[in-house]
Amino acid sequence: MAAGHVAIVPSPGLGHLIPLTELAKRLFVHHNFTVTFFIPNDGTNLTLQKKLLEALPETISSTFLPPINLDDVPPESMMETKIALTLTRSLSAIRDSVKALAESTRLVALVVDVFGLEAFDVANELNLLPYLFFPSTAMGLWLVFELPKLDETTTCEYRDLPEPVRLPGCVPLHGKDFVEILKDRSNVAYKAFLRIGKRYKSAAGIMINSFADVEPGAFKAFKEHRQSHGLPPVYPIGPVIKTGSASGLGENECLSWLDDQPIGSVLFVSFGTGGTLTSEQMNELALGLEMSGVRFLWVTRSPNETSKDAAFFGVQSSTDPLRFLPQGFWERTKEVGLVVTSWAPQVQILSHGSTGGFLTHCGWNSTVESIVHGVPLIAWPLYAEQKMNSVLLAEDLKVAWRVKVNDKGIVEREEIAKYAKGLIEGDEGKLLKKKMIELKEASQVALSQDGSSTKSLAEVAQIWKGHKN
Ligand code: UDP
Image 1: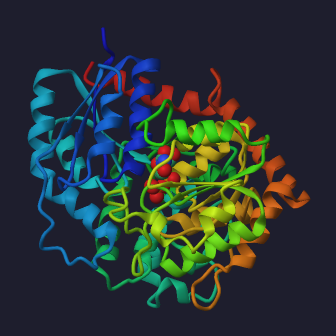
Image 2: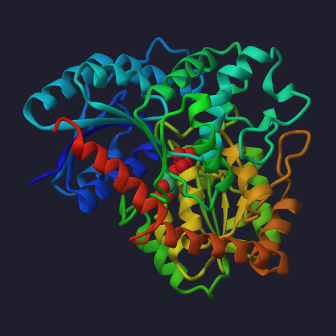
C-alpha cells in the first residue's frame, strides 16, 4: 500500500520541473509515495515538459492546469514577473484540483518551489503539510530569509552597497551578484518576490537541492539560527539531478561525436534552458572557441539583443542559430567542434569520458550535474541567481573560473580562448578538476544509504507518513 499521496506544484520553467520530477521519483522509489503534479502554464511551449512527465513511472501522474492569459503583461517585463503571475492566476485552479485529489486519496503534503508560496493557503485549508523545494543553494535561501531585513535597513540599489553582504555561514556576497529579481527595487518583480519570500518561513519544512559539503557553513547556520530567526527545518537532500534521457533531442549526434574524441578533451558549452547571448557576444564566443584550438560541443541559440533569458519560456530557437555564426566558422572548426541547436542531452554529455570541462551559465541544475560528474567549470552567469552561484563556485569552492566582462558587457574572444585552453589543457585546470572530483565523491557519500541527504529525505518522508494517522 502507498505511504500516502503528495501533490507538487512547480513554478513554470523546465529548470524547475526537472529536479521536482526527480524528487517525485525518489519519493516513490525510496518511500512509496504516489505523486500528482499540477502544472501551471500559459499554454506555450510545453513539448519538453510533456516528454519529461510522460517518461515518469505510473505512480507519478500529472495534470496541466488551464492555461492562463499573460497578454496584458508588457513584453519587456522580467521573466520572474511572468512566472509569479502564472502561479497567482492559477491559484483557483490549483485549489480546485488539489481539493478534488484530497477527497479521493490520502493526500498528506503539498510541495511548491521558489514562486509557488501562495498555494500554501490551499495546503492550510485542506490540512496538508506545506513544504517548499528550493532548487538552488543554501546561500540563495539565506538571501530570501534576510531580504526583508535588507529591504528595511537599506535604501540604495543593492548593487550600490559599499560592502559585500555577509549572509550567515556564506562567502561574502556583493549586491551586484544578488539574484536578478532584486536588481531594481522599484520593479513589480522585486515587490512580488519580497512578498513571496516572506512566506518562506511559513513552510513546515524546506527541502533544498544542495548537500552538506557544498555549503557546510550555511547549513550549520540554519541549525544555529533556527530559533532566533524563526526558521522552518531545512533539509539538504541533493544533489537531485536528471536521470535517464528527457527528450531524445540531439542524443545520438552528440554522444556518437563524443565517442570519437580523446578522453577529457572536450569543452561543453551551454547556457541552460533559457540563456541567450547578443549577436556580438555569440560572434566573440565562436571566435574565442576557435582561437583556443580546444575541442568543443556547443549548444547554440539564436541571439537576442535585449534579454539574457529570451528562451526561458520556450527553449527552441525560432530562427536557425547557425545563421549567426561567423562566416567560415563551421568550415574552419569542423574537425574539432560540434555545434548543435537549442537542446542537447546534457547529463549524458557531462557523464561522458571525453568531456573535460563545461562553460556554463551556472544554473543550479547544471551546477549539481557537473558536481555529480566531476566536471570543472567556466562560469558565465547570465540571469536569475546565476551570479550568486558563480561566486560560490569560483570564490568559495574553487571549482570554476568566472569570466571577465568588459566595459561594454562583452566577454572577449582572447579571454574565452584563455579560459578554454587553461581548463582543458592547463595545470590550473587540473587544480579545478581535483577540487571538483572531491565534491563528486562527497556527493556520492551524501546520497549513499546512510548519507546525509538520504537521511534528510527519509526524515521528511517519516513526517509525511505520520500526518493524518
Ligand atoms: N538541459 C539539457 N539540455 C540542454 C539545456 C538544458 O538537458 O540543452 C537541462 C540541464 O541538464 C538541466 C536543465 O536543463 O537539468 C537546466 O537547468 P539549470 O538550472 O541549469 O538552468 P536553467 O535552464 O533553469 O536556467
